Length: 315
Image (tube, rainbow, N blue to C red; front, side, top):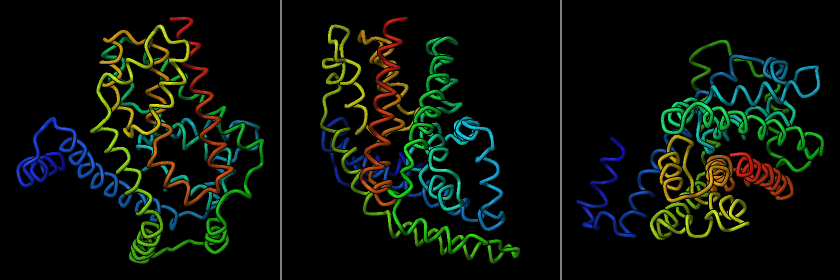
């Protein structure tokens, strides 16, 4: 429905040519803008309703396990069963921080949720077999858990924006028993958060649309081929601005493999696209201060690069 509407506006109403750079860029922008804002609004609203039903301490107890590292593992596993794109996972991340869940645990969720999901797992299994699918889910979990543990050890809570902690303190005892009250609270919370982040979302989607329309299809295969020893970091760097979810990037992965790109390089590219997107960065920049944002992206990028080299060596 959304795709047909974007096609109609771009190619029928505005008369742009399908397959042209400008046409494809605008089509991408229109489709993803509506899709992302719909997902953001829906998920923020649902999260707000849930948060109004349960004291923050209940969420904290579920993820902040007494045993060291178990909270990161639980958060990463929770990310698998909540298969949102990276932008959609951000509101849940904010809710976790506000509820008092340790910062490192929330980052394990933030990495795992967009990177690992059952749709991508099934598609990978069908295209490449169960071994590649198992590698995908295993490495995704390891990256999410390790990234969260490292960030937790660095004790960077002071680099979360002050308003997030203020919201946490102000809503620490929030429990609304009346269902109509829950809906009213969720509506106000959703509108307030969208007012803060909408400019960042638009900028991120615009950059992704430009790259989608104007970067040649064979660009990545040319610069990240088997003969380039720097293919894996190149693939990671080029994957960051190409916003997509895990299921959406799999057709690209298939095409890259057909062009001869090594499996580890392809996996690194796929993980960078899903876990380190520009829209996610611009949204998180309104929640995290620059040192924490840079640390998060740096740790995940290094972990993904190591994964790529590892599997290029063994596959």
